[in-house]
Amino acid sequence: DIQMTQSPSSLSASVGDSVTITCRASQSISNYLNWYLQKPGKAPKLLIYSASSLQSGVPSRFSGSGSGTDFTLTISSLQPEDFATYYCQHSYTTPFTFGPGTKVDFK
Amino acid sequence: QVHLQESGPGLVKPSETLSLTCTVSGGSISSYYWSWIRQSPGAGLEWIGYIYYSGSAYYNPSLQSRVTISVDTSKNQFSLRMSSVTAADTAVFYCATYKAGAFGYWGQGTLVTVSS
Image (cartoon, rainbow over the protein chains, first blue to last red):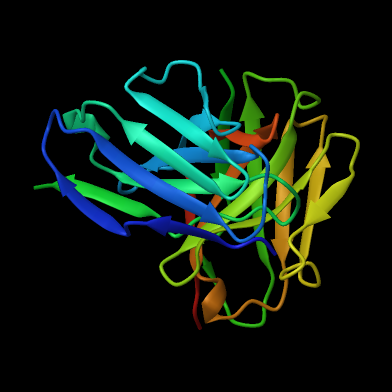
């Protein structure tokens, strides 16, 4: 199985901050990498697919980059509704696996 | 807009079979792969498997021996059966669509507890 790691595991930030989360795959996955946001008690929500494509309806302050094994999710100006846990997930081959998550909370 | 809703028992006894159904509305059953994903504090998010409307199913090898996913196109539903459950299978189970490499639509999730 391809293992996904994320860093940091948690971070504290303020509204308006720029935030970057990193995801690393245990082998090259080309651009088969997605990002999700999850709020407590809710299902994950797709933000970014294919490493850098913004899902319809997702604000443009979210952006993704990377290919191969290293990927980043950037939130350019953190908004109150962005405080949540973020997961990366590869779709290079089955079994699909998710990263352990990065929790973004208030500083 | 595709809407998915999980249903099934919230409590299952150890060694028994967990059965969940996902009802789909607002989308064609032939447009997606239909997936099950679970989330537990210990294991995080885990892809269980998916099925196409034709009936072709693919499973996570770690669960393959205990899992069956089926689809009923006449009812716009797909289902999960997981046998020989243990406390380690306690989780929130989500159904979701899979298309173009991503899980785009998710159900709200249903908590299944394995306990006697």
